[in-house]
Image 1 (cartoon, rainbow, N blue to C red):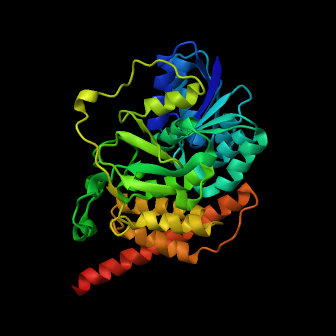
Image 2: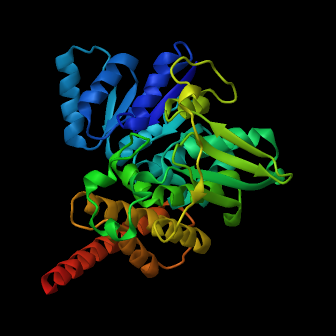
Length: 399
């Protein structure tokens, strides 16, 4: 039985991961869970899976969790940790065979890196890990002789397709993008879109940040950077196409012209199960593609005029060093400001571009360098949000 540690257990991917575990009894145990602030969800997970160690966001929530568990009458209370130390305790648990990295943001970065250094199998859903610190994390995995198994549907699809040939036989990877809610919106109208409109994704139900990143297509820019590190492909070998149906999750084109595509329903339990059971394929009754509803498959070029974040991500990847880390940090700050209605939708890419212009091209030698660059980029992004917001307010008054 494989033992799991899950970083981000109460988030969307974490909950679906535990759903997969429960659908395959006898295959997996759960030894450690790291959550944030959703104590009610975590209590239920502790009741069902009886982990040895759990972690929450801060000391107060650790005390609150202990009290909730006692009130529930749960006799097997796990060790309760919190903050950075807690994430590391979960990610490096001695009994964990697989660490599922599903925490949102850089909060799970250090724990995932340490898990890779220890030679644990990492099932990776957290985009920020490879965007911010791809070179360091991949070097740690290679040194430990372990492969990072992608959980994101696009990279999971590429991983599956690559089983049909060698890396040297690959001409290019094709990552598909739904186009989000604004695929057909007139460009002029993007200036006034609301958070509610941006959160109304046509195909997927995800957390707030990744849903906004889908609307700006920054998520696809992140995925280009991830694919570069995961599969060792040059930037020019990674293409993005808009595929509104989200039925083909990604494709691999080989040098002889053959193209392998992975199709599946818009259900994250499928790539999660693939990563957890790899290299086996295990039968599942949870998800299946309904062929009767598959009427057409459309594709179109991804416009960087409509989606400038895709261009910014490629520029950051090409320049390298601290820029991809700054890209992620600035995006997180800008998206939060948009959701709080402090920044217009088009201000997201403006803030990111300004932060990238201010970021020096330094190379990371250790994880502390990554965390320092992340903190500095966040500081700059807050400044830029204020400037963009102030300028917009002045323009409104002038009008």
